[in-house]
Image (cartoon, rainbow, N blue to C red; front, side, top):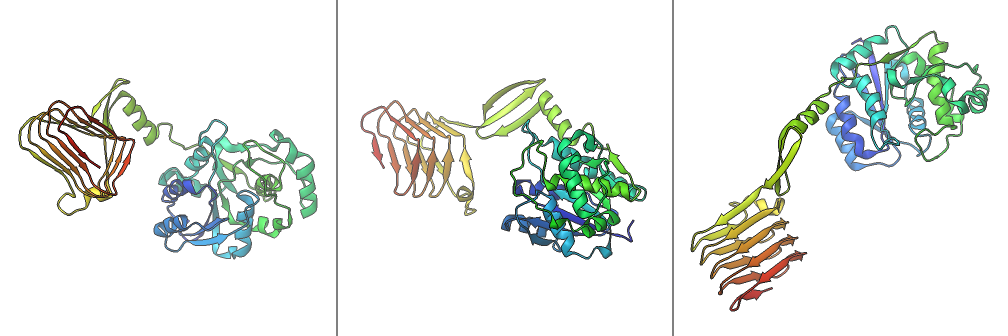
Length: 380
């Protein structure tokens, strides 16, 4: 298989799925390949991610119509297919009616979920014409619009006998190059590919007809479709989720969550009680590393019971959901310039002689100041 090149065609419509697609592309093994990415609007972040993964990635901007089918036809129309032996057709796929990525994940995982899965499927092309997820291989008898008027009309227009055949629903598959060459020869770009909003289970477009034609051409050329059913029943993600259900310790914002046999309870992650006197507390830049400027402090709680303490929060720090509770005498709190405080509580209880100073340009959002006694100085 190593002497024949693979053409990898990826259409990106949902750019939030780029990381998922690239993760699966890492499983391509046993063959040299060229990577082409199509999208309707150039996206700088998407482009950078693909180039970081493969610096030789080529990009093509296409019209936003025909779902993933029209972009694929545009791409193969631009390329010489003589250098390739196989084609891997991929695209992003939206959530289904149950708000899950079950279709996308099933199509990808059974095709290239691991290096071994991909390698096995690539070898199947010695015998088969197409390889796709077994669960998504379906018969045209189950979809009425393409099986009747529209499918027959398109076939008659392009000079193809309208025979029924199985196909890979979702059009994510591996293919022999001969099938893709025949698709290119049919000049399907002559069809009117509608710019139609995709709905789960929708039918009756030329893009859906073309989806069936891959299977029809495969059958016409004497090949069958191989249904891959290699998706791991117990995936790594499933195992990790199950393990977390039984036992786990996780940090989230200001809480630490403990789970034992499905029962979860939490404690505060950051909680400091200061009982001594004359203590200086500096929440600062961490020795010049600009720690507070680059990271938000979430859920910090400081409780002071001693006297004569000095608390200083350095400029440009960011705090969220934090508490400072002072229950004693003569403590000074200085918050320097440009500090961002959101949902923070400053509670100065009990005795007298406290100073709370918040300097200019600090962003105070949803803060609460509780000053309970006389002789306290609050400067904002």
